[in-house]
Image (cartoon, rainbow, N blue to C red; front, side, top):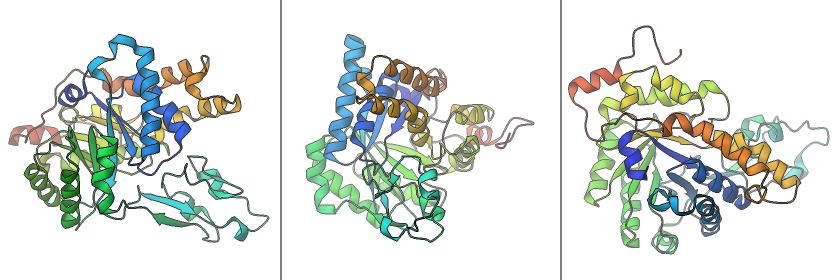
Length: 360
């Protein structure tokens, strides 16, 4: 199914590499596996080296698929922000200040294996922030990374993405508008402009952003970020994303709405229990859980001193696991409604089936 068809049909799946993830070897491997598994979009840091790594993974997937690849080739989406955002940060600390007898709780909680005796391996860190409260001495700090306005047009012309994801926060309508002007200045034609927003961004502000998108002739995709960067924590995190969809669906501007933030293998069963709500969800994005699922195989390939995609024994195992994660969404056949919902449809979407709640 082509990406646009998947959005319209409620079968959209996006793989998130991470807005600040620069682990090139892992990005190449994971991009190849999740593209071959059927993902419709690869969401990447706006970084030339990262995009080049993802394209190498796509080329590998294309060789596996052969002529059947065609128009189903995934979109490349770049993540930007209209200001400071947890997705665009790196952890940092001076390991010389660590006590010799420290049990290193920061290292244990890091899902990206980005902390070792030398400190934070910056290219692996994707900003989840779990190490910050883990340090008993408070030695870990965060460094925000926001792409300078003047760099955006040239970078987009260089990288030629299919889509952009713009992370936004409350009260930043003017900054959001400025980013859109920078996108327009690039001259790059985008298939979609995804807006990533958490529960703290009100529906009224989303409508303001929708007006700005339409002024630029951009087609929106709404990404509701229930519990950012937490899908690999446990099954319970999936509830936040489904709950946010239930709370916001009736008030959303036109355009497909997608789950994100805390999504994992429990997301579809939870959504499915909500009956009509499921039929109005365009799809899902998988980030941390997608990496943690394949992390043992990435490490096994590393120990063999080769990439995962170059290991004929390991990559089929990775593909099997990736397909199992994506399959419930890829196999959906009902059609979502990309436009505004009628009053009856809104009521149906917001009502849970008798005896079922988000926490079931």
